[in-house]
Image (cartoon, rainbow, N blue to C red):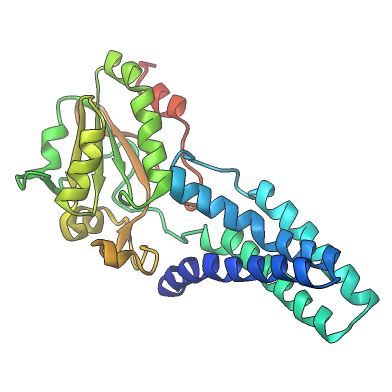
Length: 283
């Protein structure tokens, strides 16, 4: 199923773009202006949303149902369906099928693709000790999570530089870094990606952040947060592995006990920065 999702998120924008182009072409060269507008409207919202995510990487989270995308897509499909029922000509059938497929793709993205179907890890449990797992820094030095013991620590497993919501989440933490620093919290980011990608991201922030590499997903496997075929199809060409990691946040105290964890089942839903900061306030 994960492999199908990986292929889906690769093909979906391409198909939506095709539908938008067809709709615009029809609006310019046929008399089906309203029908064409409906076709474009059914496909354009998700296409714009995905393009915005990838181009700007400024959105750390969305609403669960993504109504800003879903409602216009539904409206476009309803317009096309209404016109089709009034006049079921052959050309109307084609446009109706295009609009229906665009709406279906949008629906699948929101309610099927975004749900990663993960099961809660049996090793990441509040009030239990953080298991020891291996890490590598971008200079190639081998380390373990044992180095986190003795300090309050916020550990964020992110999918990689390719993931726009992950990068936006890191930006949010950076914006609020002063509050973490005042609470004596060490902030750690871990991803299953190359040293060059990790180094590039680390150099972006002139803050006391720690960026580590989870080589071959060894830490994720130990923690039970590996996302098989979690990488969108095609991103392998950029040097990423097909297996990724579920976005996961773990907070530990000085003794290494887990005091908070977030194991979202929807990759678009992430904890707010203030929620993460509040974890470290003394009760």
